[in-house]
Image (tube, rainbow, N blue to C red; front, side, top):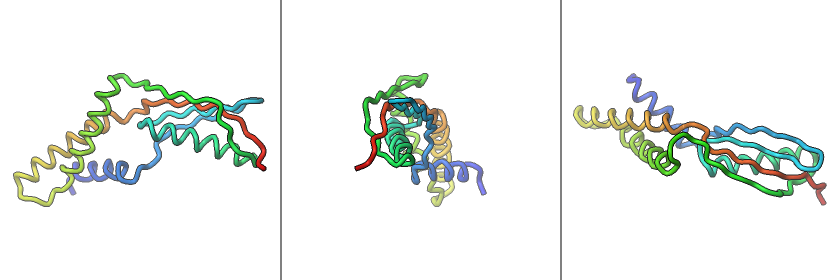
Length: 140
């Protein structure tokens, strides 16, 4: 099996199934707790931070009460350029991953898939940081 097809398939499975890539750090406090989350996508980082806070409080038999949140892009390249490359890379991997066409088209598809994979990997850093401050309130 062609390595490019395998790599494209692996990368596409991450795109298709939305596997969580978030790194979560919980910092408990006496009155206020903090969840710090880093992830590849802004929305995923924000969602993971809320879920982490809710899970933390649920384990203590209470519910999360949110005090503040902040989202920050920490990547090396311009954020809009990064997002444009990421979207284009995803599309290139989808087009290039087909591979069931005549030889010349298959070569072009393989090239697109490889370029897409390279762009996708280049923009896969956990460049979004979310900090959520919350407390846990007894249920009821």
